[in-house]
Image (cartoon, rainbow, N blue to C red):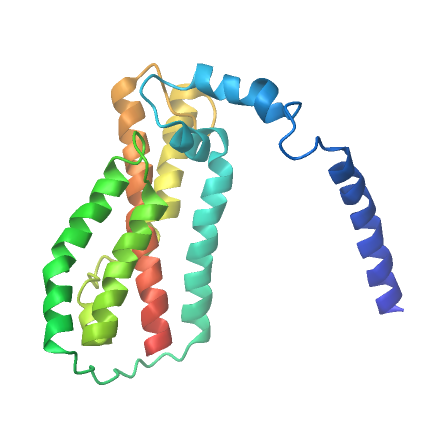
Length: 224
């Protein structure tokens, strides 16, 4: 009986979805909304000298990006809840002197590049998630070469709870400020250029730092 109900439910949901997909314009068709009016609207409404990709991610579909940030935060929470409480430090590997030297040499440059990608992502290619991947990769690289304890050294223990939630917290702050200055959540006040810039940079920083900490902690949770 349960199987029949599940099959009926799946069929009832899939039929309108298939019908809606069949009614969409052909892929690449000039009749698609993105070609007829959506892209033009984005270009006309975006502030001057703005990175249109960032405007779409943080403004037009800001709630969707907020959902993505919450998903990776929830993944970390789930892993930390399910894993054993006691952390068992693994013995640090013995890296090749050449590999160890190279990792030490490139680490500060990786960090500088990551923050450059984060801080300029609202105006140039890059952004918070891209910077988070670079920073997280930096921590993982050191952990793989020198051991998990070296990776933990990159994470400030006292500030860790706040840092791993930096993404959702940055969106919360932007939502409140947007509601006050524009009348709707995650609205970025183009009429207040300084605040507009600060909000975009703040959200990118929250995503970048929070994402990097989450990626690092996921790695450490699997190593412990």
